[in-house]
Image (cartoon, rainbow, N blue to C red):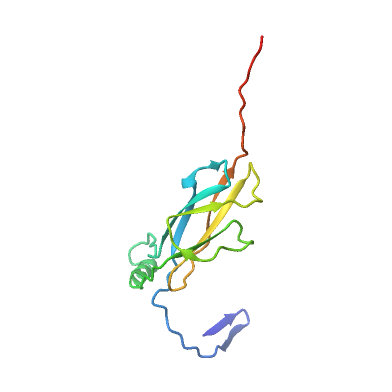
Length: 154
């Protein structure tokens, strides 16, 4: 390879032998907190998880390079064996990778303030070690309310 800069062409790089992966495509997926509910009264929630290792195709026009790329992607091996991991904050760290399941019990971070949206992040990996983009969902943590009966005395 030879790089091009504003000053012109750079020196070629050293020769490197490479072998393409049979499965170069990362899995993709999403999560929903409590089935997509907008709010919760509890920090204990259920994550609904969906992941696939089959590459998602776009909507290219005929004969475009995207159509050619989609045809090439269909020829790739799908390694499957999806795993997932979660975090309440990408800065705090992640859970260990675990086998994919469609639901997961989760506890919102203790720093999540009532009346504010709380975020949960997820990432997926296939058996070829391809990692997905980080996805997330959020839910509003409502403060607990106690309603007492109103008694009027004459």
